[in-house]
Length: 126
Image (tube, rainbow, N blue to C red; front, side, top):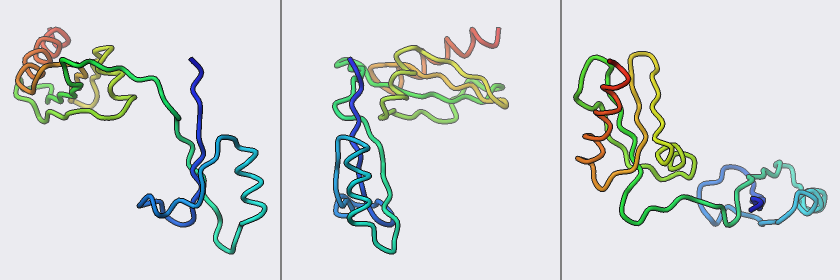
C-alpha cells in the first residue's frame, strides 16, 4: 500500500492543535495557500503519514531495553510508541554503541522484556 501524506500548515511553533492554520493533501495546495496567505511570519509545513500502515500485536507491547555492556542490570526499560520504534521491536533489533547495548522487542510486560533482552544481550557479548 502506498503511503499517503498530509501537510499540516502553521505559523510559529506547533505546540497545540489550535496552532494549525490548515491541512492539505498535496504540496501544490500548500504552495497555493502560501502564496495567498503568507504574512510577515513564514508559514511552516509538517509532512505526516495519513492512515499509515503499522504493526499491531494485541498480546504484547513493544519495548526498548538498554544495558551497560558491563552489567546485566538494565539501565532503562522503555515502552515504545512510534511506528518506527515498533518496527525495530518487531524485527528484534539489537544495537551496540559506545558501551551500551539496546534491545528492541515485543513482550507481554516489563519483566518479560528484561528477560528476553538479557538473552539477546548475552548472545551478543559471548
